[in-house]
Structure formats: structure tokens, C-alpha cells
Length: 296
Image (cartoon, rainbow, N blue to C red; front, side, top):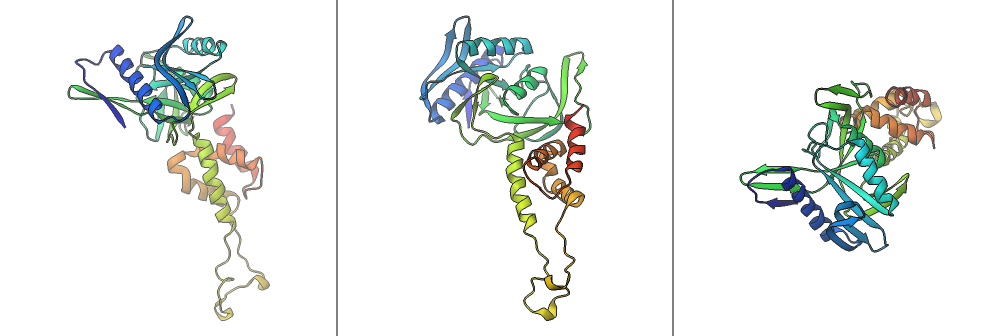
């Protein structure tokens, strides 16, 4: 869905207003748990770009960011809203000046992300929300919001970098669809408003559980043949069949999921799964790979 607007310029204020209108119109129309909604609402010295009140009573202030903003200002606004009992939903313009490089709803490797993107990713438990403003002849179209998940790059260290334009990080980026536009209010360190989308790690954990279960059910094809004359081995005769384990299974997982998720997310997901059960891979292999990306 796009919201199309006609204008004679692409000024900062116009972009900001266009995104506000999209967020207000789309969420109000598609969110089933909204009781009240309005464009702008004052909370003392703070003014929310869009405001929603849920049927359960929670209030959500939507902050739309197109221009550059510091990490300190993001945290100050978030804390100010939280002190008033208000949850905050931050949404960035994927092509605006608050991002390290232009973002799109797609998987990419070695992307620049700004310090603000990095802190929002932490606040929102592994996701940052964006919209894009696309320019056409005498017309601008605002996309619906989407979520991106960041993970450590396979090629670049997790350090912060600096150039003439400012500070940035290098991360792999994974696009995650938003299946429901209902708003969810989370109390974890801060009062955060978000959508009902999964993080990339949780999505992969579900897929890995199904994949490992399927692998665990593999059986020797020769043992299963109907007529004994065609069997070159049998369960009773010391069948040498072995299920995939350790490095071989790890290689198979990377072949299956590597192109979509990348190595760091795969190792993060395996590390979490292996804490609860035996998955057929020696934990030392998982820990070694996990430490490469997540431990300094």
C-alpha cells in the first residue's frame, strides 16, 4: 500500500508530514485494538507526531524521524514519554538523514547503520521500523512500515567507525515482514510500542526447529526397502547409517539458511536452541562461532 501525495517540493517538513499522514491513516484503518487516534498530541513539552490509545488503556506516541537526530535526543524523548506513562513507537525514514545509509525492505550485507539505528535496534529487541518516501513526477509515495534486523557482519568488526559525515556501524541487514498492524506495548527497561512482528532470530529458531526435527527422522533407505533381497544392510545386521551430526550438520544448516540469514544470526539461533536441548551439534562448535560475532 502507498499513500500518494502531490507537491511542488521535497522539503524536510513535507516529507515529515507525508509520513505522519500515512502512519495515522494506515494504522487507524488496519489496527483492531485502537480506541482513539489523532495527528499530533501534546504531552507537556513533548508533541507526538501521531497518537493512539488502545482499548486496553495504553497510550502510544509515534515519533517519526526524517532528519538527523542524536542518540541523546532519542533517549531524552523516550524517557520523557515514559515518565508520563506513554509508550513510544519510533519510525525512521529509510532514505532520510537519521540513517547511516538508505534502507529498503530487503536483505543486505555490510550496510552502514547510524548510532540512532543501533540504539533503536537495542530498545526494540532486534528490530528497527522504517518507511520510504519514493519520488515520482510531481508526486511522492510513502510506503507502509517495515522492520529490519541487524546482525554482526562476517567481514567487518563490530567497532564504531567515523568519516567526514559522522559515526556509523557496519551490520548485516535482514528484512522481516509485519504480519499484523495491531500495536503491542512492551515494558522492558523502557515503555516501547511496536507491531506484532518477529525478530529475524526468532523467525529462524522456528524454522530451525522444524528443519532439525525433519533431519532427526531420517532413516537408512536400504533398511527400509520392502524386500530383504534388495537390502544391502539391515537394522539387525549392524546398519552403518548415521544421522547428520556436528560439523556435517552445521554445514548443512549454513547451506540451507545462510543466504537469507547470514552466519551470525544462524549461530545466535543455534546458541539459544542448544541451551535447552541437544540438537546434534557439539556445543563447542556453536560457542566458538558465536564468540566470533557476539563476544569481544
